[in-house]
Length: 325
Image (cartoon, rainbow, N blue to C red):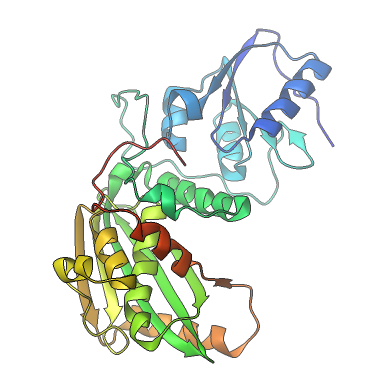
């Protein structure tokens, strides 16, 4: 189902959000031709301003002479609420009308009129990240969506203050259930959010469970490109009593070595054992609940495969630019 655009007569530039796939872009091009829309130029955000937050797109790129193309529902409704033009596209629909039951995003309190336009808003990516990304296209899309949600909540990753991570594990039959929850706070007075949580089932030797849980936490942070701010990993002291130091870890094998190499991807990383507190208790309760019932929240682990990949990397990674998502 599609709807008439209702565009004014003057030609318009289409600003294509990063959420748009190649197939969706081609669908919209065909739709525009079929509907006789007067569109003269196409600006692909992922090529011209990679990693640009929605607030910056709205500030710098959209005006009365543009049309946004997005599959982000709140962003679509927000742009329309400003009196500007937007198209929403998904697997079935193309519409320029507001979407029902979707909230409009509030303006960020720190918006400034003198922010310079940049070609690249994405943070530097460690070389190891290319080895850690999911192989499944569906899982990679979920990861990209999570990154986008965090970025847009804070108006850009440069506004992050602290990435607080809580990690633990519990036995699950002969296997092991690893749990990680990530909370992110800002430097600009916005409320902290639960940015991500992940629960995976792994077949691990008893001595590997603590280091593997820590590896799972660091992998998730690197995947989300949250490695640059201050990162504090609070590990369950009852389950993970003493992480290996970097020199010892790099001399070791297995998950201890992987843990040492992953630490090299962080600018400011602190490991802190905790015996209690509401965040740890909430994670422990969630692990118990997941272990007791059927759920699709537990994902099959791939840490053993990642460990083998990382073991082939001789040097601890240093920060560099990476164009992969």
